[in-house]
Every structure is written in C-alpha cells, then in structure tokens.
Length: 267
Image 1 (cartoon, rainbow, N blue to C red):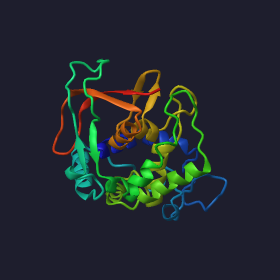
Image 2 (cartoon, rainbow, N blue to C red):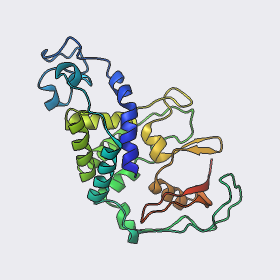
Image 3 (cartoon, one colour):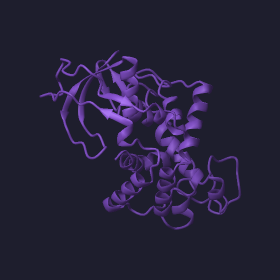
C-alpha cells in the first residue's frame, strides 16, 4: 500500500511545506499580482498555481477537511484499481528461499536473488524508465550534501511530467483537492515535488530528501534506511551491489510483497 504511505507522509509534512513558502495571505486577500511575493492571494492564483498555502484558509474562510482512516482505505483501494502500470503476477518472480531466525543474521542463507525474474518490457514503460533514470542521481551515503546537475534536474522534471499523467496521480489530486489540501493541479505538483525532492538534513545540511530515503535508500556505515522500493532492490541485485540473505517475516498478500528481508549492500 505504498500510496497510503505517500498520503500519510503528505499529511505529516503539510505544515512544513506551508512554512517553506515564506509568504502568507494574512492581510493580502484579493490583492493584485505582486512579484515581491513568492505566492499570490487573488482569485487568479488557483488558475496559475501560485497561491500561498494558506490562501484557502485566509481568503476563502475554510481550511483542509480532516482525513479519516476510512477515507484513506477507500483511496488506497481506488488507487490500486486504477493503476494500469503496476506489475502483474506474471511479470515478476519472487524467490524467498530461506527464513531466518533473526534480522541480525550475518550469514547468507539464500544463494539466489530475491527477484529471480522481472519482465524487461515492464521496466521500459514510460513511468518506470523515467523513475529508473533518477536512481543514480543521489549519493547514498549520509553526510554528503546532494548537488544535482542540469541533466539530473531535467530527468526529475521528466519523471514528474510522466507520473502526473497517470490515473493514480489524477485520483490522488482529486482526493486532496476535495479535502482542501491543494488548490489546483499546479499546486498539487508543486507540493509533490517539495515533498519528494526538497533537500533536508539527516547527517549534514542537505544530504537527504523524501524521494532518496523512500525510493533509493540511504546508507550510514553498514546500515541502510528507507529503501522501500522493489525496482531499486532488483536494480541493485542485478548490478551485484546487493546480496539477499533471506527473510524473517512473511506477510505476502496476493501479489503484494510485504516481507521483512535481510540484505547486504556494498559500501
């Protein structure tokens, strides 16, 4: 249910995103456009996607509607049903092999990769291909600040453009718009980019981001955090940079793999 995690993360950082756009609509409602501010507070701002984050609350007299657990369950089921890009059970093979008694196990009990087969055609789909192009744009080791080249920035923009066209993102936008968390499609994309790609400090001032932690994984000494992404796992296995030892818990449901696994990554 990765999309549920995306929405929960969105809710957690909503206030941080609001604060990151320094300007507020307090005392500025219905004012004309001004390039002295990073965001606007007039009736056209939703059209242009440059409203201040508190425009709805300050100028329209309403704030975001609380999201319930039932809302998230319904949304998660909707996203699952409309996701035309997800892998079918015939497009990959999981080879779990040996169950380990502890996640601290340091002996390789599984000689073969966890993902023994992935359909190459799946990875060539537009969203997959543009996603994969981002995986080498980050420094996995914490404590080293990220610096992105113009080519890497273009890859990020291409990825965002591709996913914004999917039914999953359309449904997510419709949900957040109906609850008052975004003001327009442009505002939604802005917040998604802020949530995923805005740098923050983990071990140094700007060595991490939501995208890097969740989808790429971060390495500190011999431990790895994040790394919640089967495509990256497959990519690392294929390159010889990840050695699968086995699994400790099995919670697989239909074709959703939700195991706790033990791996070793090359430093």
